Length: 91
Image 1: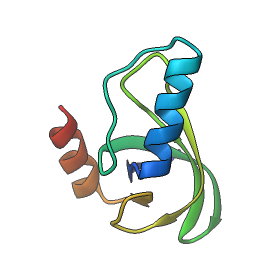
Image 2: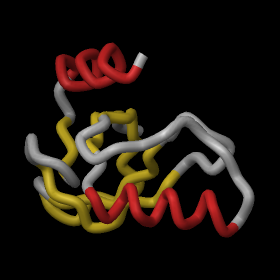
Image 3: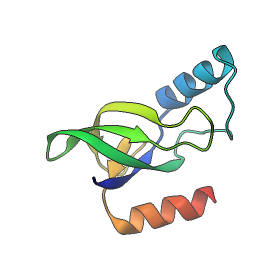
């Protein structure tokens, strides 16, 4: 099992908020650029994977499919520094 840091994009935020509103689930607010820990559940290539993202809410984990490795929103980064930085920013 490999943990990575995943940075939410606008589409993620819209889907998470829609799910939370329609299913009466709750969690702390999410914004594009927020970083959360995730687990790679299927790696397609060295730079593409399906992830389970661990949000701060009872709707966790969130599926993020076919995401690419990188530093931008909607990307994942396997570095320990990225995980630590993202957790510190959200905590």
